[in-house]
Length: 108
Image (cartoon, rainbow, N blue to C red; front, side, top):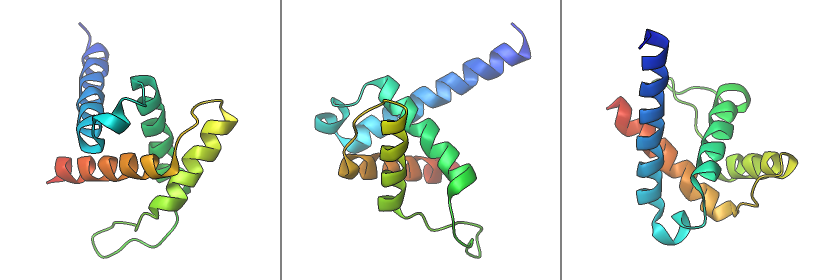
């Protein structure tokens, strides 16, 4: 197996761990409403948002404050445009918080 194959496999394993964390974080009642395709889509859009569209000045640790409501609106708008969802704003807020907590746990 090539090193690229190993990287892809490792990335897929990490993504699966992240989705499992998010499902546990948001609880089964909400998690049951979202397929894995939905969760991977939301995480992809969220990652792109953080990389390209997140606005604000970093604090002394290099972090930018995330406006959860604005981020959820962004995902909802993009999902509608790309014919995904529909997603609930409050449920997206939980997923966003789960993603932020997961990343914080991975850093620590």
